[in-house]
Image 1 (cartoon, rainbow, N blue to C red):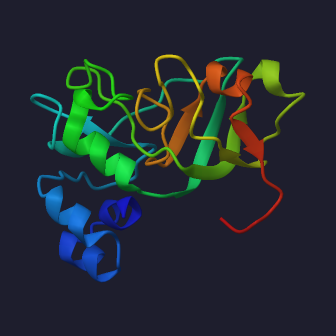
Image 2: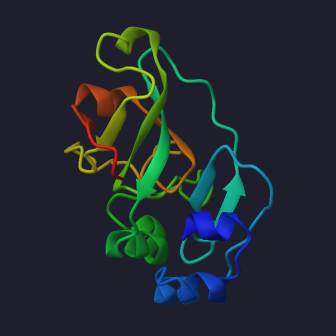
Length: 178
């Protein structure tokens, strides 16, 4: 859905491609920016943090020695993403201040490592295929696609933080089919 939208397709064209037509209708206020994007920040909520979702062009910060940069190849959109969009901060995994500090959505995703932090070169390699374990099991419920400004699958690139790596949420994938 996001790829088609980022390429300038209108909502009707995306719906014809079987890309969640009901969700697209619900997200009638999506704003697009044309051009090359390093990251798509889907799930930027405005006002009270519910329903007003926009795609913004956002530059990612450099990774730290304990992080990896993932080029997202596939990301699914499921009912829990829809619930996070409609409930905003009332959703158990969405931060209370999401209207002021947007988070990236997309918690079921996989891709190819583009950069590997200096402290992780013994575990990961540039070009390696990985899948992301979406449930991190943290006491506060934090997880990709709900709780982090630069960690989610509805983007061209995402930064996988140290906490996710330490919890074993970056899963090597030997296949080529995403």
